[in-house]
Image (cartoon, rainbow, N blue to C red; front, side, top):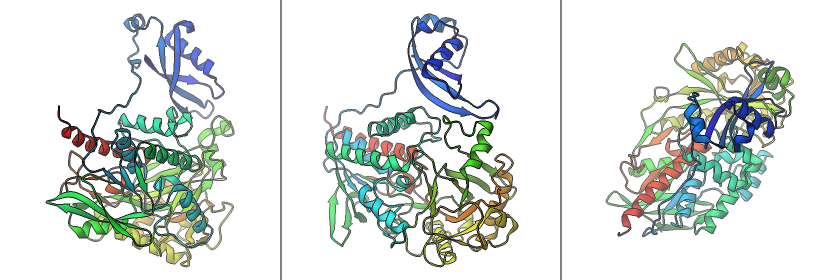
Length: 537
């Protein structure tokens, strides 16, 4: 099979057009192509007068060996279809446990189940079905459920997001993640889109189907159940203590725990730190706000006269600026046609995030506008100092929002001019709990505020509407990544506690659905390695 890159295809191009353009590129008769599969499709909008797709395809070709003898295009490669395989294993003495059922925990549990290890999953939040009702109730003005919300529950924080599946990691396991999502009901197009996404509306059904598959393969999942302690003997894990919602506690005997708690499990971080069982260190992360523009403005800025073409959908953007003060300012988790959501998980704190449905057909576009910070900004050498900084910023935002879980907001023009917003303009905020116009300087230290301000101005050079005066900033966004790292060794186990596998975003080793899922798979593979050692040959 041959992989052919860089095939230009018009926006109205069909599969047959792609076939013929592939033949033209190879300078062969189209009848020589036995099969063709689209591997990647991206949008080339560098020339706003000629927006088109760029495709990569895999083909089976009659006379392939003869073609390769005469091929002078170094970009054409021989490839083999992707397959993920597991070695046969025997059940471990005690069933492995996965703590947390976000992408990392979900895929760790799935691989363990596929290997016949019948994992036990412990998730502090509720199932997707219950969790959706709890979150919608909070967004409608109801009380915050601190154990099941946008951050905690089946599917993790990604369940209420755009469901982005692009990643910067170069790991073949990412393909397995995409294939498993498709098997669970995600659209096939995620297998070839340059920037694949599922959308929050379809992601929830996909998560449910993966859960059902884990259970079908012998796994057990306990929702509304929180890890409260770790049982050890001679620096080796022998079990975990868990507590059901309502107070019932029990111990699960196990020698292998995948710790996939997510980046917001602050009480678990504190438990782990106070136990002296694991080595936790500070980690850089980012803080900022959500910025909202009319989606039509972004479409025009990115696609020009092709902005309304149905093949393109809602336009995306990704920006990164390096400032003279050494700070990096960038956009993150851009949600075309999406909304800004209330993502609090602690009482007395306001947290924002973004979310889109699969269709991305909302009026506004939003993205996190973030500034990178590091241990030098935390004000303390305590391993959890970054976490405590997050909490302080969230409480500032809560106070600025009149302590009702409304969020502080400011027009971009006012933000740049450093004056309070008293009213908002034509862009209507989508944050469900309501916003309070103000000056966001009350939420951020001066250097962070100024970095965001300069970032907006400079990003306007490449996206001409970015500093649009009536665009809205809604604060604060603090949960882009974990503020800590739980240190692990080359076998992905804690450097101080054998049998504990710190995993995913919450352990500081991933950033996004795909990278977290891949890390979960890697941790599962390491557990399976120990099962192989128990097999007697």
